[in-house]
Figure 1 (cartoon, rainbow, N blue to C red):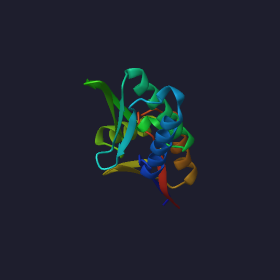
Figure 2 (figure 1 turned 120 degrees about the vertical axis):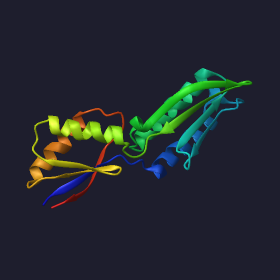
Figure 3 (figure 1 turned 180 degrees about the horizontal axis):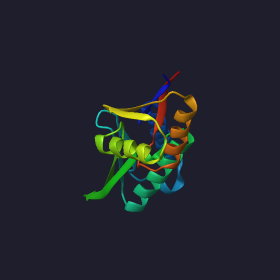
Figure 4 (figure 1 turned 90 degrees about the horizontal axis):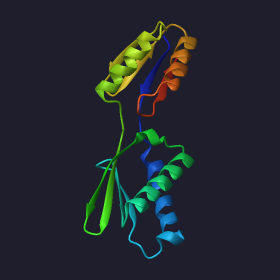
Amino acid sequence: MPSLDIVSELELFELNHAVQNTQKEIQTRFDFRGKEISVELNEKAKEIKIKGESDLQVENVLAMLENHMTKRKVDIQSLDAQDMAASGKFITQTIKLKDGLDSDTAKKINKAIKESGIKVQASIQGDKIRVTDKKRDTLQQVMAFLKEQQFGLPLQFNNFKD
């Protein structure tokens, strides 16, 4: 019986490359020369810290990071920017990374599939949703339907079996 898994996984190595490319661009930009600006990825805590001397610099670095993420095909929906915090002469912004389906989002996706009218079996299994049906075409309809929806995080479809 054909099935597929709906997951939300973050490709940390691609994100790491995007952060490194942003760091290189910071070093080459004329308007950042002589300023203390940094962007760091903490893979264990799943967050990115941007530190700059003004909020405009922090916003520019965030825009540069989003640009590099888009070039590396990492969905920017996985970023959850927190409020900026000032300490001393520096402004810091922490960006939390959304990785994996939490139970609330999984329930929303499951409910959306059931309300769509597509006759499939969808079940939440930890941090993924398994969708099964007798026909592959029906599973592809579910994939197309979910790509049109916005759930606040990127969705991937893997483990497609016949």
